[in-house]
Length: 497
Image (tube, rainbow, N blue to C red; front, side):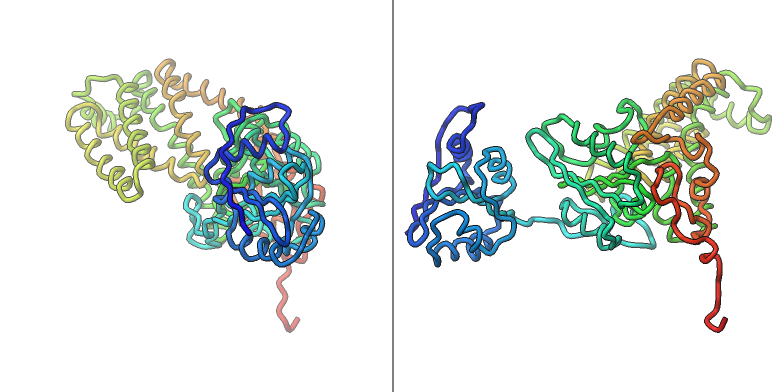
């Protein structure tokens, strides 16, 4: 016999919360279900119908209770064919498990001890291709919002018993599952302890994405430079783990974090390891040049036209003078107008639906740029420079560092307007000093440039062949620094030798 009851109690929160108080509070929700089961097993079953898997309760739990006369929670625990059952009277544990999608069974409503049965509904997005870090060659799998699926994607690439996964719950309200991954015997224990301690020290009510973690455990949260590498690629996380780094995965986030990291890592793409080393090195140098050009091109334009006319070649001077003959604004205002226009188009393209955003970006750029030149608001020379600078900023393979580059251009423009090339040099010195002091989980962020480490330069600005990279990066301070035997890797013997 079934007695259905949808609770509707209205009780004020109590700091000394009992199980009865908790159940009354939960019963205020429409999706809360609580009913009494009679003959042959007398018990009270409670759960959120929107959070549990119907097959679990209808095919495994209820048939077992209806078929057998079970007169204790321990008997139910031993007979219900579901893993992860637990008997507890801790209200905090009961609340946490209830909100995670567990079914709660009491022998009587007045009982303080309950049986918790995991039955969370599995609503996960299928594994798809990377959208931000897309690569032409190489794996085509990306992380999804399920923590268990993401750990599986890492484990199937790194089938080692030394791969350790630790889990903590963060968020005063959300209790978000956060996993720490590292390879025991390779990763430095001090780095692991630092990451664990910083995660456990987080005080916040909700953790909805890994980007929250990035901001909360960074060594310098006021720096515009990201100090943890954000990636959506399991193969990149696996490569970092093998180097002795630590990975952080957050339930509900399709991105993973790796640390400690260095600034040169933000300019290396996954394709660099799937292409021949000389091609990968050439493309990496092109990216570095593009970033420098993106940051310095418009500040140099402002500085030269405002203070250093003598630096302009005679053949080019006539072209620049003619292009600016009817411009009513100084170079700094002219640059800011175009830069803000580019940023507006970029934001509009990112927020609109994909096909509409692409159309807005292309058509808007052409129409506005042409109209600005014809209206005499900006010169055609500057339009070309700004367009190339914007194009160069898109070459960064990591989205976070691309945002940083967009931001740091403006201090350089201000310095160029105030003091010319001296101002550009002062702003550059400021940022270099900031990068020299910056650290990632206690390790130098500007390595291997400073402190200078020649061994790590093998995979910094260029990528040498794999058989030349027999040592793991010094920056991570790995316990086992040797990857493989370089001498044997360099030998190429035929089968008849």
